[in-house]
Length: 377
Image (tube, rainbow, N blue to C red):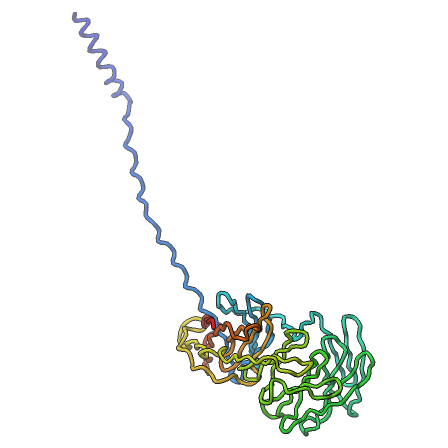
């Protein structure tokens, strides 16, 4: 009996002895690391909206190109600055362009003739084929001849005479025959200094007062007969370029960019006059010179100008059946889209004008400024 008890005791002691001789219990699991959420990075503020810089003397619009989606143009201050802009018509946003746009040609011809002149010759080229004309110039003339050619390359107009003395003339030439057709005297009263264009087979002369920004336009046949005044008796043509919208129909922007005249240059008849004074809108807000960023925040809109500075605005073709006008001073960069079917200014996009630069020291803001804001008429 004692032996059985001893055996039972021994069996019970064996596991304890084994544990005492090296067996270890598992340590508790380590605590899970505390998850600390990192703060989300702040989104950078949106860039300041773009403003259009106005020159102190002028804001002359040029290099205009337009589609149904966008309008591109450049603005020159007449000195050193020539900045170019794009306008997204759907988003009503302005941007600064790194490269000037390819200027839209006035005519609908995709490959118009070109003219090159020296002091004694006029060379007209259609594609690779060129012809040379030799107008009779004053003895000792050293300046390149002032000449223009129509898109088809069939006729050339050469400015001649003493314009400032009221004796300026235009010689019309037949290129294929190498022959002068007629000499036209265009001076009328104070409107003596001329600028010519050939619109198909019609001569257009914009005659200006030599010492000021005012001009009147006249249309002539190739035989020298006056067809009509451009746009009517009081329609100013200083510094503007007509735009072809159909075979014989051209659009003329008046010098103050308040009216467009659609005129048949073959008959001289004015088909339509369109009031676009609404393109000047509220005159555009001005960027605050004291705000940070490239143009600052918008100040209150300036009162609407009565009209634009003569010759600074520009007209072009947009989508099918549309014209586009971009304004110069005093509200440079406003864009108007005109529907030819209805004769209405259907959309305007108002630019923000950059604040004037300080006279000394500061940079006054770069091309930052304000959203264009579109309004549907």
